[in-house]
Length: 542
Image (tube, rainbow, N blue to C red; front, side):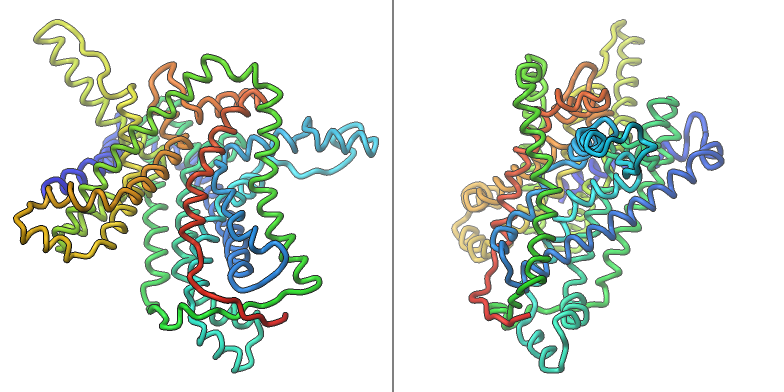
């Protein structure tokens, strides 16, 4: 109980710090922000969130229904390949498509040579560095959240419910709209909530496309204006968005009860698509994979090969080592803390403990930029207080012990991704029968001994899975790393971002390719977890 409460307080520290700085800033520029830039930040952020939400809903739900309920050429391949865009960070795909589609890119250059156009006035081409471009880039890599959860929900729906809708004369479209979609609404709501949280957290894409969102405004207010109080106030506004998403997700499924169907192991009736419908389904799924993964991966691989000698330098090796070190330490720390939380919840199933464990998972919902402010403020206060004390009483300076060091970055990673490890370990513990605990206790074993001798050996797979996912998430994390990293300290994510901001896309391709390649690991794990439990595939022609 004490350990779980301590973890919850530590996780809540960044949120409390942001609130304190926002309420008591050294220089209150909130009225100035309201009169000038804040309305534009809010409007653009809402437009971005709505656009990404709608597009990921269409991409994710449509592809999940086709894969789960239909048969068409390539379905077995698309079943796992639709998860591949998960491996590509949004800022990486933004850099690649900008290099390809901007005025000086090879697409427009080829069009001008082919048609004899001389200037941009001679033709129209969509601007990639725009709000619409940011919506498309984010949607192409975030739709797997909705696809993954929707597909699992479609596979869990009742076969008898589907057959009843057919017997009442529902067409496949009406069955989807009136039966399948309402049943899977909770899963879709969770997926869309994750998408919106990731969109709100994004900095690399909106910064590169010069889209004025709240996240970009936070960076601008803090780093360019030098006003951390104003940045904290914008961060509080972002937290309101986070709270609204969580409330909306829970409200959307609060009144809907869905029980496990007794016929879940019976085969679902699949539609056999033929002719133009089969071609359309194949092209739709293939387009998502091509645009979201194959195109950026192939371009990055080509650039990395061409510029390997210029890219693979001692600095690159150092950046890669920094990324692997931080991500590995964060994975180990989150596993250790997550194990404490999960085991405390197993030992004490009271409402208080469940609430404390739930609070400890709040960090995952916090945007990286907001979390960075919440980490830096208390760490800087500790460093300044200790330094003043040592100067006054002992005549020497302690310097920066927490802020401006990798400790701050590591702490932010642990707070942000603790929910991932705790959730995976909790799921693993739930599969261990309580009778094992009772048997060990009857033989005189204490809870710590039971954890060490019984639970940890049985949780090795869950621990490994959680560690891999946290490791990959840390490798891709950009906003918090940009703010909290020490001077002259770069990770692969910040290295790629810095090069891309200087229009050196080709030189940054090797680093981006390494991030994408590492991101494929959890995709493999996710595909295994989504393996269907239903047998057989009865066909109905459509």
